[in-house]
Length: 227
Length: 251
Image 1 (cartoon, rainbow over the protein chains, first blue to last red):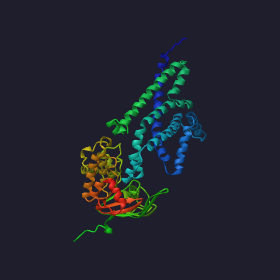
Image 2 (cartoon, rainbow over the protein chains, first blue to last red):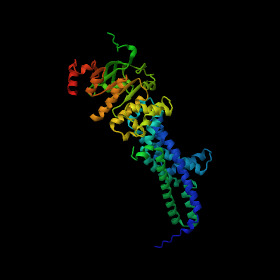
Image 3 (cartoon, chains in turn cyan, orange):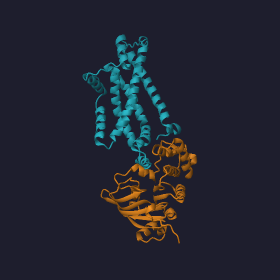
Image 4 (cartoon, rainbow over the protein chains, first blue to last red):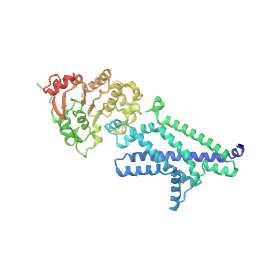
């Protein structure tokens, strides 16, 4: 066995890696933000008493959860192209990741909504709050607090899964790595470095979610107990 | 002798007439009628499953009825076109399990509805929160979270939360059933003070001693019907063997 690692040629390309890492974070940020909105709306939709709305949201979740992310990306990519619409690879990647994570987020948030005891909603109804007010003040915030660890994991997973968008040549971290390794013939070193960068990105995201949690869940910040 | 007649219909706050309600094949209310006048305390008693909690919940339309009529503060509760939120601004309800919002402080629990339903200012709502909390003896708990309070304190906070909406009638659904005797006592004291202030109340309770002390009228429910009704005195000298048996085991 003769393992000869040369990181020097790889390190020289650090601006490209940094650029790729920033793009990966951007993709993750966009998909997380929009995915959360879709997740909340989707969860409300799935619990809707309107059967058609509930059905449509259910189909969306099942279709996304039962098809590979790469296929979804290609569907968005070629689908838009065949409609004659031209978007950047980044925009397509962001859209596909948002649609994907939105479905998983819908299920997570729905579980959170379902965990709110009936008595909480009755108490709010008894205080004459409207349906929208009950959802916003009484159901959504505690529900999100309860499923916050699951949401964090899901969004970190999404950031890692964004490497698949290199297939449509979105210039994120893995795409940059593919390019550099074919340029330098230092494939193993390149992917070791990329793996380390992904770990750092994951840790950064987890830290970000932790900090955000302190801001949006004041009870937890003060008491430190789970809801 | 000049005596205020409390059956005067103009002062009727809650009226049920011939109310029927089934859960599937199970008949829970089988022609229930009673009336509560302004300033009156009506206590609903009866065995578990006799329909007393269901009757109470129908008043605030937490259950819909099959037939009959319910009128509360001028709202026709049995009308399908009822303005539900208007009804619930006039009616306060307190539950056995407190149901405080766990992610909000006591102050936020209390100010939520006045701010978002009545649209009063935050400052005004906070001022009011202080007032209703003082009324239930919890002014020092303003910034605590529900889980930091004892069961009795949580229930008193829940009563304060209801009071902040300035209801015309308060409903209490077995509010002390989850509490030990000491905590029960502190909650009952708050309810007594409310009664003394002239609050109209309907309550379901198993505390017979308390019922005797506070009730203007007692309604004994049995098999979905009002089996016996009268002043608190009926608890000590019941007319029907069923009530005699019930209070015999209850006292």
